Image (tube, rainbow, N blue to C red):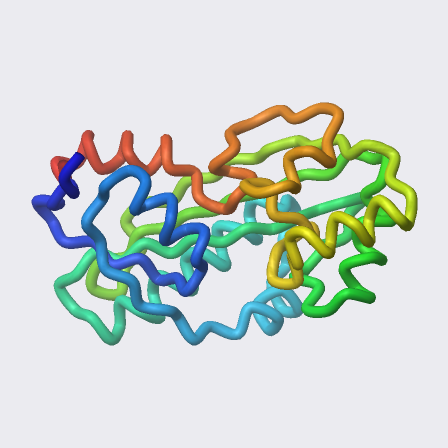
Length: 198
């Protein structure tokens, strides 16, 4: 299937390889420019009541940052907030933190919150939110170490790559697999169709 050329060019403010793959899988011809937003600073300073507020705030900040440098372009920002027991689980970055996160999630339920925002000429013109609920199997330390060896999920919220072997860690999942991976592609496609991008 050939790529779908959008009638209105769309920039995706991301460096995420899995998000890039999702766009490729759906044959959407978009551009990618990574944002330079300080996510940790936003998380520290943003007064949010719900985790979807934070996900949308992060997505909006990314979209606006890239939009300022690219006038007259539509820019999509996306962000994912992994939440467990009112704690945000950030990308672990190393094996030790990865083990700690998976030990917390073992046998428990957590949420992947996906926020999206589109900016045009330094204004947010659309936002969207979706959530997935995941319950993990009981995992031994050996189970966790074996899994980490397979997927090395050091740059993944929740410390797993659902699209690879991570899906095998769960006993129950409610929500879109794309939301779990950090891009609610179904809602985005609906917006693009309704607003004549495709």
